[in-house]
Image (tube, rainbow, N blue to C red; front, side, top):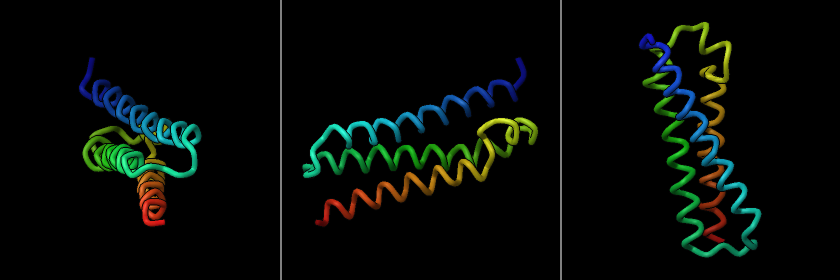
Length: 101
């Protein structure tokens, strides 16, 4: 097993975990009523910020060491990861505005 294989698997696991965190927040927000409690808002923000930091970590530290063929062939395209990063930051800020209301 080469180092690139291990790094690719680690990157894929981190990507799937971060996407799962986003999906978890979305699923729980559908179940809860519209009037979130303060503890729910803080938990959602922590989860979404963790997801965003994982995307940022993948982009900065994992992708530069992977061959270009692997990143372009799968969902590890840097533009896709940046899009997910900005989406999670946006969702976290949206929840913060909910807390203000």
